[in-house]
Length: 366
Ligand code: SF4
Image (cartoon, rainbow, N blue to C red; front, side, top):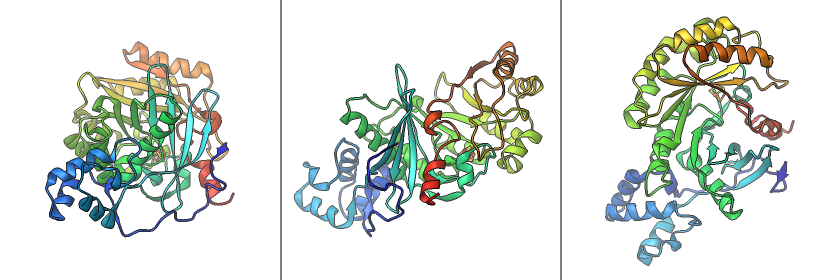
């Protein structure tokens, strides 16, 4: 791993301040905050646009604001950014970034370069409380939610790194890093508003994907606020199997999750994505594939099959190639679009379900 700081995993606060981080506001919230200071909401809109221009870290750079107003902002607010503490490049070109938070904790984001796009997988929490049995992030436990500024800060920091290396632009955002985004709901909503605002980070809803393990009521709530792509971590075709590997299923069983999915308004022309990790001997038989085909009947969707990434901490193994193809075959014959997702970045622990293990161990001094 290329370490950019002498000890990026040390748990020491970078900064403590009583000032307000303006990157925690979406445009409307910022306009309200500026109004409460006695200024025109238009100023809030102006500042919001500055916040997401490349290289803006200081109010003095906002040259169309009166000097006195800039000084006033300086007194009460600041503009956060996330330093890149560590960076690791996979043999397949995937880059895993370690980003340091103000309290010294570390999160990970993964950039997946492809021919025509650069997808950034971002985190929504430090650790995760959902406890999925096949996921290393789940074994970390939960530390805290990320703020909106920390969620969008991952995108700004990594875009800055790409620009410095003239390596192109991030084209797609997926919430598939550390954490369950719908368990950090209010901050997710604020972050999505910033990500998709044309004065903010300006990603389209078609290039933004929220992934969830199945918090059914929040899927419905999210659909009332935003029309974005939705990915469901399904990983089991019946409640009995899913209960064993995903504790969330005890609260929100499959039927409830699918009902919430049916109500979710996707961007036009888009379909639901179901993620299905294949665990040898647990959920990978032809019978499981037949159950899955029957379960999703009539749901416009794509299915991604993810052969399990083995790790010493995880009590599961990867099915044989023949078993994976046989599973795919059943679904294809039933008329589904099914992709076997080759794990990107597995050699640097950046593949699905592998995030944060190493950093957490190093935070603990393991
Ligand atoms: Fe959390 Fe997602 Fe891992 Fe489940 S798979 S423990 S929801 S990060």
